[in-house]
Amino acid sequence: MFPGAAKTDPIDTRKILELFCLKDQLPLAKDALQEVAKVPAVNEKLKRLSRRRRHLVEEKIRVQNRFQADLQAVCPELLAITNDADNLWFLRLLTFRDDLRQLARLRRATVLQIPSVGRKYARIIQDWQRKATFSSEVEYVGPMIIQDAKRILELLKQIRVLDEAMAELAEQSGIARRLSTIPGFGKTSIAELAGEIGTLNRFAGEASLALYLGMSPLTFQSGQVCRTRSPRQVNRRAKATMMTAVARHARYVPESKAYYDRKRTQGKTHNQAIRALGRHIVRVIWSMLKNDRDYELRGNTP
Image 1: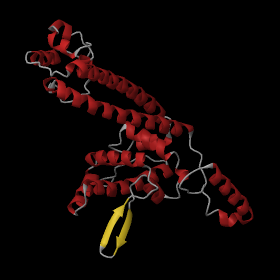
Image 2 (image 1 turned 30 degrees about the horizontal axis):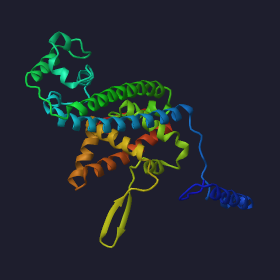
Image 3 (image 1 turned 90 degrees about the horizontal axis):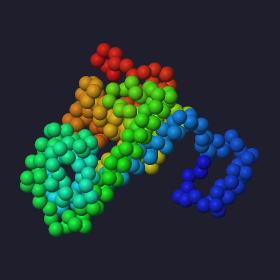
Image 4 (image 1 turned 135 degrees about the horizontal axis):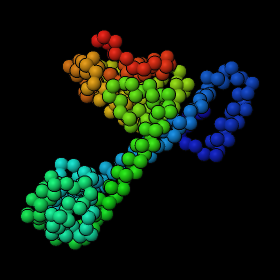
């Protein structure tokens, strides 16, 4: 209810005493207090699951970057056979043996036994085997690479399970169902936004929602200097999700793409143009949720 730099028992005690002192001035105290709106249970679950998913994705990126750097140092030709190091067939190839050097001696029939490896990838692997070389570090770095590959496979499985659970919960969420009708808003983005928004009762108006979602930067002006900055009230998770969803939305709706292009011609950066478009999308979202209506394209106007 009270903003503060820290939360400790002494601070809480003082604030409780302040509340008691405000007892006789409740009409005046209403402006100093913030009501905590009740959030539907399904949106609370979506918030927990989506935040867990984001943590797992961030961990996967860290492990994958380390894994690719080690593999580049030990056997760059092996890394070069794929354009995406987290391909299932590639990860399963790396974890098929306990020693990376054994992969260069696998027979074609054995390679075809690896899950997700068909004739196309078997041919690519055989081409690599003819020129396979390993650095002297493979003896002690190789096991690290295999461990990281196994961890990435495990993370991908956990993320997939969370995606299925979030998709099932999103069908029960009123906010998620409405957001799903907006072109370009994917399943993950819908679930994350529904979880972070929770309920519209938390916001005084669409401007408050735009501020919370990071689509309404504050103007900072002093003399000839005029720039924008992000307010402290922004939900960073929701902002990141909105930036991704709005960028995809611009590719699906010609009018939104035209607005984005117009902002770019005015000298805006990509992120600034996306936030400007996102500000209009927030108005649409607010109207959709308030009036319980789906997203519609009427003629040439979104």
